[in-house]
Image (cartoon, rainbow, N blue to C red; front, side, top):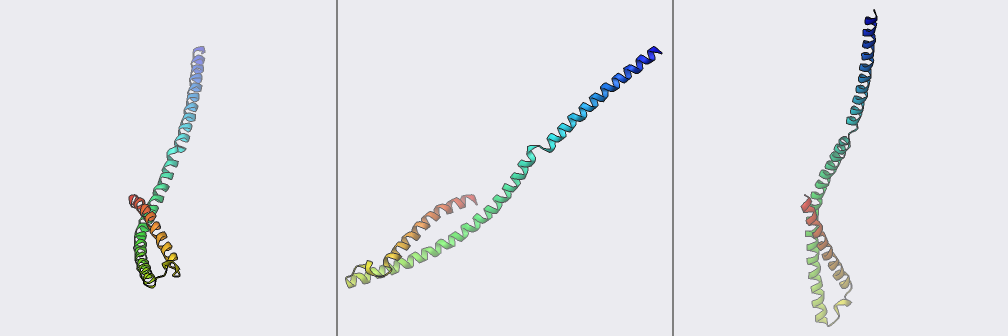
Length: 135
């Protein structure tokens, strides 16, 4: 009987070791699961999707803005051409009358506005190149 008791004691001891191993394995699996579920890739994926979506929207807006800017620049060139014609007429009339062209009301204002418009067109041209590279 003592041999049988020894065998049972050994079996109980093996069972306890097995249960400890099983518990350690369960804890390890729980840690692994927690690590997988909280992996940084999920946040990276989510943020990347948002950025990609935002970029697509911005790309579309950039394309629309680029096309609108082209139309606006053409209209501005027409205004500049008209201004130059009126300024030239004012200069011709002023010369014929022997007066200073700057004394004609709004001459300087038109001249300054035309120059400002030309400067903005130059600046916009730079922005247009950047937009074109994006789209």
